[in-house]
Image (cartoon, rainbow, N blue to C red; front, side, top):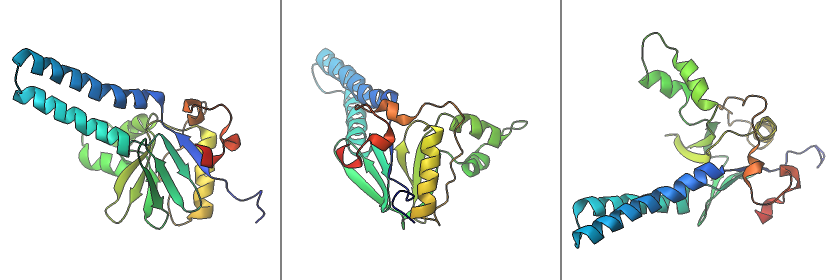
Length: 197
């Protein structure tokens, strides 16, 4: 296989909406907790709990909410604000959407409605997760669905880099905006140097 035919690393970006939600939630909780502290004049249980929840959300945002995900020959790299995590292909059981059809079927037995149909509607907006290890622990890769060309590039890369890793995520609908619209620099994914993200 020539270098030009080899699958290139694929870069996916988290949506601005997801980033804003992750940033605003702790600020709101900290603000309410601070108002509670000021009003009471001493620490009270409710403001302490709100401040604790805000701190947990902030830690997740900084260390476990990926801003950029890179699919490459060695595995999937999750780039968070204060941490980079490499998920090696040997450890990745599959690439899926959050809430697989199997789990929807198991927990949702509402009569007269198809769990698979509900799942398809939900997954039309959801991003990707990597299921890792025998217990299939899920790691968020993107919070919003990718474009068709990006999906095809990830699927092509999987076939080359890790043929035994199944792509269980449904294909996005035509016309879905690509995730590179969420990045700070201009250009297309092919023009974006992976090492400069």
